[in-house]
Amino acid sequence: MSHANAALTPRARLRLARLVVDRQWTYAAAAKMFMVAPRTAKKWADRYRAEGVEGMTDRSSRPHSSPTRTSPDLVRRIVRLRWRQRLGPVQIAGRLGMQSSTVHAVLVRCRINRLCRIDRVTGEPLRRYEHPHPGAMIHVDVTKFANIPDGGGHRYLGRIQGKANARATAHRTGQRGNHYRPAIGTAFVHTVIDDHSRLAYAEICADEKAATAIGVLQRAVAWFAEHGITVERVLSDNGSCYRSYAWRDACKDLAITPKHTRPYRPQTNGKIERFHRTLADGWAYARL
Image 1 (cartoon, one colour):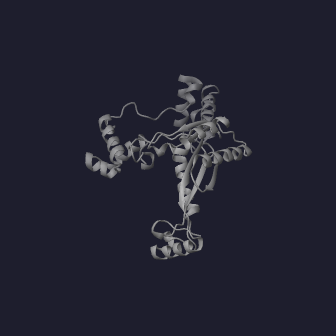
Image 2 (cartoon, rainbow, N blue to C red):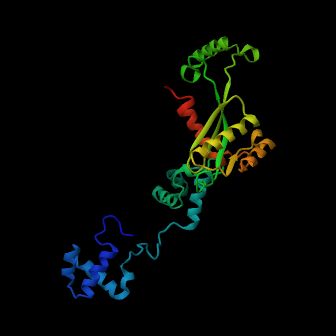
Image 3 (cartoon, rainbow, N blue to C red):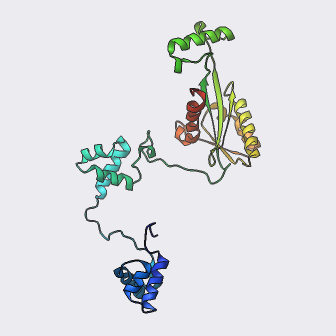
């Protein structure tokens, strides 16, 4: 495909070549009309004579051979250091005794030049996915946020003032824990997010029991239906509320196929895990 600043597109090349070959225009006259050099007009005319219309398309500029290209064995060593040790181009170049620009070119060619594309745990390239249409898959999970005492907590006021506010709140509510410590409580936020559209639904609940999770799912499915989304599958972790028979039966009643992530593999449910981080930074603990 021609670049944005190309003087001639494939169609213009064909017109130029036909003026020279079919209408017997001189190279100079045809070149003047299309504002290119006579040598360019000759090149396209000669190619039209030899190959016809097919010769007007762009050709690859890749060389037939690259003698100085990085060897496959060296590429594997670079990729191995990148995957396993998450080293940058300068560190890899120092270990292998080569130029950092060459290492960077290899990383770009292998599409691992950014560390965000490499899994932190396994060191393997991330395999990102997205279901084809809204409702094909929804993600569910529960995140916990500590309730904030009256006047603010320690996150922004410091430990001393935060504890003082917690004691004042406990004195007002009468909620105490072990050793008469203030019990501010925990908010269980049940979240549901559509895999394709990222449309999210969330509820603040008092627990994460199966009955609570099922109620959230039922209300979320109805809410998605109001927005024209029919839920087909639901993906969750292996929490007790999602492994229960009640959850399985509720999904069956809603005509939804339940799916579970691999144990100790939260990355599979990474879309909703990232949404929890957004909730924490932009809502739960945001400084107003």
